[in-house]
Length: 339
Image (cartoon, rainbow, N blue to C red; front, side, top):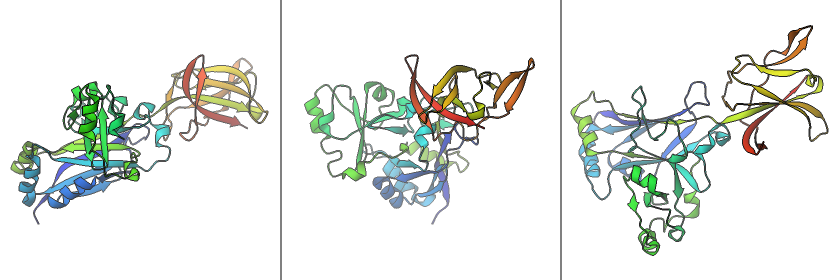
């Protein structure tokens, strides 16, 4: 056994968490990648927020054979799951769409000021990173510009902009739909329906070139590729319901920092017949696992302002509604105050 050294690293980030890391993720190699890793003696070390893949110096020639294959370049592919039942609740809605999955490709070139390489083109994961799930060749139409075989059970479709921006590994389609159907019939022919279930977080494809392998083998101090994926927290409008003794005509809600304004929406009749005084934030507020906002409940008294509650409860990712306010669709976090 030779000396093991890191070949690449993948780390997940999320602005919802105070520490900035997305823990509770599991990157699972596809069956094809697992076979390559076994043949090339690659070792993966999983972490709560990602994975690091190590190579064995004694198996570099085997790796280079894979990397030099022009027909099937060396790709290390993972399906990603996340252990958060409310992940979609606290994550920006741009990251989700029906029959689409997030696809992160190391051929994207996006570096931040610290030199981190992100597997998406924008500052955070966005709709631009969504790829359509290939279900049947008969579902192809003119909007599809290319297709990628990710594994024996999964293929992805891309539009013209996605294809032009990053054509690596994609098979181009054309205006001849019948010809495209013939080209793609064998992509997932033997895949069972259960194996086509979309992963809860997305797919990651890491290209490993012969040039990268040469640099790693020639220079022991060579810094390996450190890939990152950064999710953005969902923003919601906070809606406070003052019930019981908290429901006072003169009461109002205020952000201590002065950055957030609240509109008094008056009285609202709740489902249980109780009346509530309602306040809604004008600005959307990013959800956090530990909110930094300090919202107070105040009342005027003797020409001064009295604090009824010095720190009101903050929004939870578990309770989010979609409502229409002045013909505009908003995500709203409902917070009930009763004392």
